[in-house]
Structures are given as structure tokens and as C-alpha cells.
Image (cartoon, rainbow, N blue to C red; front, side, top):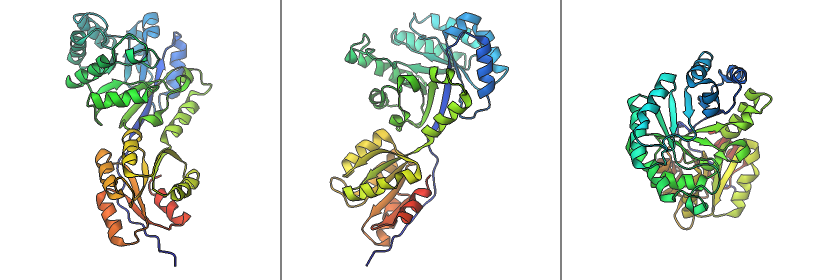
Length: 359
């Protein structure tokens, strides 16, 4: 006799924040105006990044006035790379930024801790939002990959900036492992905002950065070269908005059954695990939106894993999937942090019902 499938639920919670920032690395003022007019009302666009090409060609005040006459979104200046001079010049730089009308400024303070402190404080004194970076998208940048700058110094840049009240950071979309290590070493947290170049032609994958709560993708060439920038942005939005799924079950058969139905729900599988310990390792990195979680597993049981996942990310939607067909187990799973509970063997309809609550 087939066991009856049961589903228990509790309310949804707020998810991650994802937006894009066009990198305006162009020299044509008319091209700038046309692009801003087309995308100004797209809410998926957070703001605009201006670099030396427009700044040196026309002057920053003119560029800021041009953009702000069309859009009131933040303008971010990237000097490519600022804060590589002596500490005292930070005040001059900060005044120029303030007088030009910039809202946010990117620094790469690779000239040492004194320069970092001087330039960050100078911008803060001008009430400008400070964004700090230390690692770049291209290979052979730090010593461990054949570059000049020590790996340890990069971590110090992020941790020292954070201790000074900086909560916005540049991280490369092409280096998820390095970014995760920096996140842990510098003790960054969900209150931080991350800006990432490397999408599009450089091949960065936003799905590898699930551990970041608020993440803005800086997109340059692929957006600037798009025939229809609004349609391109919508395609990026849809790709990023695809819910990420992780499947945890010690039965390969159950994992295959769940995977078979994923396409119907427009979910992207970002991880699989057959035991609790591996599940937690993957979860910390990938931070999927939805997890199907077996209860009885080797190397850490499902209820313990659910509790740990809920501590790491209170917004995760965990669907407990188990053959323990009693209401008490379902209630315990919900208390532990699961959002719904399905009894094996389950039908496709029951699985769809569980997924549909979170898609």
C-alpha cells in the first residue's frame, strides 16, 4: 500500500538582491546619452560606472551633468585604479570627486595601509560612498597565480577597509574561489554589497557567487555592443533570476527522480550531495534558493543539516524529503528550518506542489 504524501509549510522570506551596473567605457558623448535614455527606467539597473575614458575626454562634471539630466541613479567613478599614490593626495582626489557630483568611488589601495587609510577617510569625510577592490579579473595578478602582488596583502586590503566602515567591495566574477576565501578571511558579511566585473565576454558566472547577499554585476562590452540594450538586460535578468536548486539524498534513484522534473520548474541545479557533511560544504559556497533534503543520511542527519543551513541563510527554502511517514517528523523538520515537508514515495504532483511555493 502506497504511503500518503504530506506537505507542511511556513511563510516565505526575503531573498537575495541582484542588479547590474553598465560600465560606460566609451568616448562618444552622444552614444552615452542614447544608452542612458534607453535604460534609465530599467529597475534592474542599479547605477552607472564611469571611467577614465569619459572623464579624460570631456571632464567629470560634464559627464555627471549629462547622466543626471536623464537619470537619478547613482554614478560610480572608477579611476582604474585609484589609491595607488601617497596618502596625502587622497584629500585632493576626494574633493574632485565631490565637486564633480559623483555618488560612489572605487578604490584599489595597493600602495599600502597608509594610503588605504588616507584615501578611504578622505572620501568618507566628503560623504561619498567608498567601494574598495583588491583583486582583478585577469590571470597572473597575485603571486600564487604568477603575479606581482602577494595573496596576503589582498586579504588585508579588504579586512582593513571593512574595519574602517567600508561595506562595499569589488570582487571579480571570474574568480569565485578567491572571492569566497576573501569573504571568509576578511570576515565580510551579509550587510556588505559586492560589485563584480567579469560578466559576458570574460566568462564570469554569477551562479558561483550564491554566498553573496547583495551582488551587482558590472557589465561593459557585451552591453555596449548589444543591438538592443534593454532586451539584453532583460536576458541577463532572467538568467540571474533563475532559481538555484541543490538536491541532497543518499539515494541516487531519488536524486534522479527529482532532477527529471527540474526543467518543468525552470530551476538550475547547482549542487548534489549524498551525505550531510558534503551538503553543508556545497551549501556554504553555492547558497541555493531551494534545497531538497533527505532526513536519514550518513555523516550528519538531515535535521541537523537543516538547522545548520538555516543558520547560514535564513532565506533558504528547504523541502524535507523522507520516508519517515509521521507528522511529528514533519513538524520537527519545520521547526528546524525547513519550509515544507514531503513524504516518500511522492508523486510528480506533490513534488510540483512543493516547488511551486518557492518559484
